[in-house]
Length: 557
Image 1 (spheres, rainbow, N blue to C red):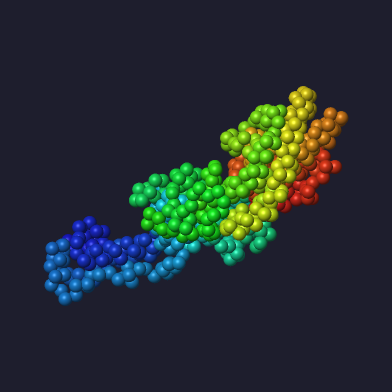
Image 2: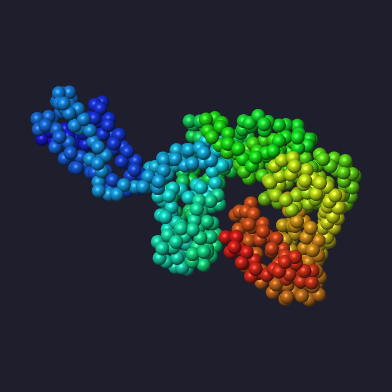
């Protein structure tokens, strides 16, 4: 009986403290199999306690019943490894998991980020965790985090379908076949997984899943990658919400100074006197290999070359740097433009515009906003600024656009001046609309005006859309004129026609103000208003509620 207790508690359950080589070896073997169980989230790879008892019982002599006797026997026996487990001794007949489905590292631009697996439902660490240095946090895309690991992607996609509203879920039955067929058309992308999945469903099932129908919060926590942000060996934060982490540490990551390679260490540039800038480079910093994105950076009276960890931030910075170089090239003309600044009345009207919570109130003076937008219109409207990467391309851009700068400024100056005057007139007209039966129209127009004209609207509105402002405001004026002459019923009818898509867009833009797809829908809605309320003004392309709905689906919204 003492021998049974000894084998069960000392060897199987590990209650004794051992330093013997066989014990260290066996614990390592068990830990390796348990690690695989954590990956596949099953407890059927390691043999149970009774089978391990039988294994020891068959190998240990019948007269050994304590630690001292066993250690003495091991020293005497010629078979020193007789009590060493092999992996086959410990494994059940369950099939081994595919190692490629459960990797030990997440590869991010050449850097291997360690993955940790834990099978402990209900605990914060349950699932897959990745340790990522703070400097690499901006480079982890939402799609890469969403994809998780190959071994869990089918489970995750199935759970995503189960979380859909019943009418949509019914269209995906049988779920296993839908996931299999969709996965065959999917690859990890930078965009969120639900967008990639929705695109595959449109191809395989001709089914449109509205973006707000997905319910990621209903998924089990282990189906979301747990991201541990590290500063050296110190853990700064852990979360399954990548967007929140990137927003929380945006200032810290943007402040990280990357060690630019010597050819890129440039400051005080007043022309493109630096060499060509690659789209990205690989550098090693703080023991990590990371991808860096070189960009021109506006420094006021000159330009520098900086490397950033975020491609999106680099693209935005590079455009501002290009604008500064173009302004420096055109310094004499810019001085002339500043002499043609907006008059006092226009500036006063601009300063009366309300602020908006989505866009910072801080902005350039109105004249500088006009000059920058004119520069974009003259030089960059038909070009992708991120593709201008060397002096030859920059010189060609300058030569092609320099003759357009002054006309572009004059056009925008006139548009902004007239738009602000129209804005004031419309507000005066709205203030006279006191009838209760016109209040819905008044409110609708006020909200439209607030979306179009707000503090800093000149610099934050795409220049291609600023050109349409006179037509948008003229459409509002004609709408109010018809309302005054008895067109209320018609106006209400047109409002009702666009109410659904307008409300859906308004709800979504509140949740995702920075989504460029919603910006595209915004300008289509403005064109729809022209078509509905002032059709004689015309639109640059055919527009209708049905066409917007189609665009909505094509964009995956």
